[in-house]
Amino acid sequence: MPGRFRETPDPMVSMWTWLAHDLRFYRLKHGLSGERFGRIIGVVRSTVSRMEAGELKIDEEQAKALDTYFGTGGHFLRLLTYAKLGHNPDWQKEYENFEARATMIRNYGGQLVPALFQTPDYARALLTAGRWPDVEGALAARMARQRLITGPEPPDLWILLAESVLDWPVGGPEIMKEQLAHLLEVSEMPNVTLRAVPRSAGAHQGLDGPFKIIRVPERDVAFVEAPGGGRLIMGISEVQGFGVRFDRIAAEALSPGSSRTLIKKLMEGMS
Image (cartoon, rainbow, N blue to C red):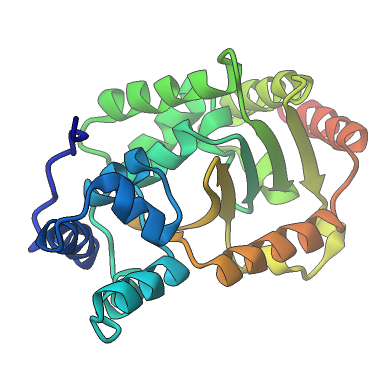
């Protein structure tokens, strides 16, 4: 019995939705089942369905395989290239989809405590300062995401935080002390490794900006944040480059125990 495929996104919305649309268009045009199409790019039928719905993205090697099979002269590779250069209006939804399926998340934060570790008051202060139209609604959604780290099969979380994240009084000293106390609590969880990058480290690659590397069953993806949006990075070589960057920053970080000592010291200095 043929598999049921999700509705294909509107190709006029973005380059990403155009790419998702054309995956299904070419598959149906050539009379291919989801299973047969999946064999061309090395994935299972359910993954094809998610790609055609825009929930997952093909990578460069898969684009080249499709261009070879369909004889499209680089069509899929060009779409993928320009999609990665442009803004994806569904970036938050797509990022949260990867986050929800993660088996490992490596996160460098140079400005803010990661959303998965924020206390409600800390998050509310950030959302209010950012002038979100529905602060309480956004706060509820952010807190709901935190169930990921305490679920039955939580991902491994490797977190590097710049010292400036820990001593910047978001919401005021009391809210920040509560946030630091929460970081101490989660740092004791078996699936969490939290390390601070001290100011004494000086110049390092993390000063270029925060990023995450998310491992899902089928691949690693990277994510970089920016005001008003974010960018998911799918290319294997570029994602590997972020992995190297993370390791180099980690080389400058304190041990987990010394990081907890630093956090306690900073709490004591907040009046």
